[in-house]
Structure formats: structure tokens, C-alpha cells
Length: 267
Image 1 (spheres, rainbow, N blue to C red):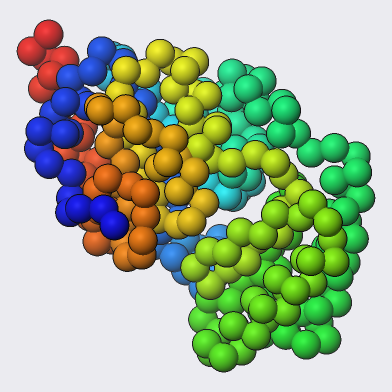
Image 2 (cartoon, rainbow, N blue to C red):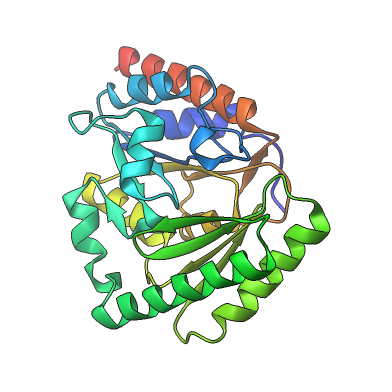
């Protein structure tokens, strides 16, 4: 279990780094969950704070998500000409050429695409015939079953059936999130993508905020003394620190921006 919110000392140490990477998950960190995944909007001011951070010398910013790259760009409003890096599909996609190159070994193969097509067909049949209350989301390398807003007993049954169905497709990675089950043929993970970006920008310190099991890959990789890893919400985690919710994450990012600004003025 992690401790409480990051200490002022930990944030100041990270903020004073000559090169700092600030990376954050989207859903459950920047934006509260919504029954309609496309209606999940950021806490007011958070995207502006990320833009302000990215405008500071030596500060590099990334938004990391299981969402596909196009959807992530739509939801964040971050355009292609902005310095903020977008990493989608748990690291399989990125607006950064350096991250894409680093993740080539995890690329989806033709065999994976065949498996994905079969998996999508089977999930569609399962939802139509047994769980019409569930929703399906399609990604470039995955199919996702959503049960947010569905009565718990029905949602649990849909997730369990989808998990069992995945066992019929060797090589499929099962990612259980909050009221969601993602079945993926991608071999990428958030931790690999974020650390690749950190190497590319020469980050001396790294800050990562995440809320879900898919963020644990990043938490476990970020073990340097100056790294600040933050779990948003409840549940066991490898992160060093914790904040309660999305507004808490927004406040932490604002605090970090203020510290980074002050450190660069002092320099």
C-alpha cells in the first residue's frame, strides 16, 4: 500500500530536475468516469495545467491511456502541433515517433489481427445473446466490454462470461478495469511506453499519475529516488503516493506546475 499525498519535498525535488517528465492517465485521473465513455470530460483546468507545464523549459508532458489515439485526441482537445505527447492503446500508439519506434517489438502482427477479428465476432454474439445491457467499444488492437451503470449482478456476469470467452483465443491479454474488461492482442504496456519516452527526453525525474491496474506497469518501472508515482483512488498499488480522486489529481498537477515555475524562475 502506498502512503498519502506526495510530500512537498518530493514534489519540489522532482520540480527542480533539469529534465522532468510528467505523465498521466486520462480516465479516472484527468476525467471522472461516465457511463458513456465518450462523455468522460476532464476536470476543468486540468488540460490547461498540462499545457502550462509543457510550456516550461525542461518539462515534458504526456497523456497515457487505454483509449485509441484518435479518441484520446478528441477527448483531450490536444492538437497535433502541441508539445504534449499522447500515448494510446496502452502504449501501442503514440504521437511521438520515438515511442512508436521503441514499441515496434510489441506491434500487432497479421496473426494477431485475425485473432482480434474472431474475438470481436464472439464478443458481439455474447453481448447480443446473453448480455444486451453491456456495451462494446472497439479499439485498434482490442475489444472492450463496458458495464458501468449496469446493475452489479448483471455486470459481473457479463464480465465473467467475456473473460471465459477470451480463454478460447490464445494470446489474448485480459485487462480488468473499473466496470470494464479489455481483451487485447497488443503486446504493449503503459510502463514500457512511458519509460521509453523518459529515455528519449533524458528525464532526470518522472511523475506519473494513474488509477487502474494498467497503470501498475508504469508504477513498478519508476523506482528512481526522484520519481513520484501517484495512485488516484482506492485499491492496492505499487505507487509511492496516493490522492483520493480526480479533483485531487488536478490539485496535485497545479501544485507541480507552481513548483516547476518557481524553480525555473530561480534558475
